[in-house]
Length: 326
Image (cartoon, rainbow, N blue to C red; front, side):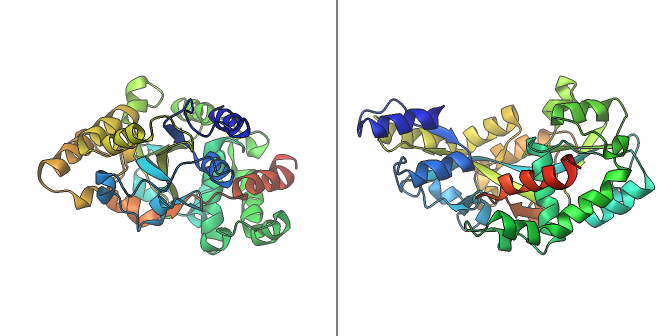
């Protein structure tokens, strides 16, 4: 909705006094706004707390494959993770790669499935598998990649998903429509694994009853990670005030509250902090129940960028052709 609002103001020639000052924006909307000249910037490197951001990390420097170029400022982070029931399984016996997942599913037929694209978690899982099974993510960073090129490049992925299908829950004849449905199946014991896209684990889902108290998380060897950003429209009425707010969002105290309340990961480099500024965030992480959050070392080791461009649409189109429509 806000993209349409800003676009309408641009078309109406409203170059100043815009109705929106600061927006929480996703990668696709960021690209649309940048392409249309609808964002103010660059500015994010000018706020004091920008020094707390690890801009050399691709997951901060790129938003779903698009260069941030300081037109956005980070707020939080999230990463694809698997969820299991520690009362039934030890993490060491569970798959940590998609090659291992195939073997595990064959040995445990009907105990795994995923949400059907375009459900976000299903597409994210498939994107993680795409990177692992086709030689890494770098080849998909090209915005000019065509659907036909993607079909050829991704053939090992869809061969894999097709081979996996007979071993899925209900033999892959149907798929959960959303992650909430998959979580219910997991909680009811119909499947052994579900998924999350979180930065600070699953403690809030356990507290709400969406997941059992014995649920724990781990990262696959290739785990999509991305960053949440805020941006300023080109015609914002209070650009300076918006920059002040963005700067406050990067304060360690605010980051700690964001982590505790939303389950987001830190939008700043905690390793760059010292003294109380580090403690205020580390205390939040340390307060989370063991196993409900992956270690920051594991998160960094397995992190893969959440590329955008046409990739999401291509993944969903070919999945429908090869799997969902079969």
